Length: 289
Image (cartoon, rainbow, N blue to C red; front, side, top):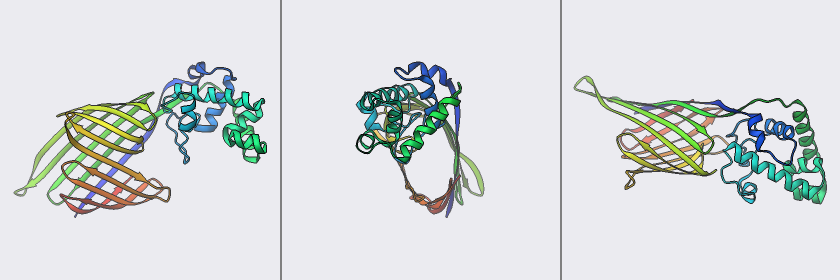
């Protein structure tokens, strides 16, 4: 039996002002877009809705693709796509009220049935935010965490950190382990890795890390619901990571490197409880904050 524990802090840091970002807006009142950013994401570049709308102005990838936007986590691309979508809606509907309502309600719905109660409520909410808009900070995520495993004769501790900036994600991981042998605790191994991920698309990124070896990474999915494939020196499979979380609180994590590790369980708010199977240490208990 062994215990696996994990603590992750997902915070926010700011690297630009909304007034600087709004310089990329064209054909709309900038205070309107500024107020809408507050309504949609509270100025957070990595907001993701349950319907997979992404970023500052919560565009869906299928809409963004129509305007040539690939990475909705990049605030400039996100606001450029939203600005183009607003222009399309105004040209189609010929009124600001219908344009704003259709952003939420959908243009086909407004064309066929007019503005419904949810579209009207959204319009009023955006206009109120526009009236109260002031220059503010734009936030992106910063990640800091610690993870460890404890068994009868082994202790491993991992720390990790990362931050996102436009189309890039920077990260670092540190690993240290000890082993108990002959009634004495001995140092086993230490690793340090630094890396960089590049997002050509919202749900696809590639990157590399440098530590003991040079690794290549391929990630499919958004940053928090991801499948990661790692190749050692671009030649052999180093690791595979799969993370799945359901709306009902159930989750599954699968990690394969030199050994197989599977963890599954349920979430209560942001705390995860579950069981973990490790091909090296058998069955254990998992908890994550």
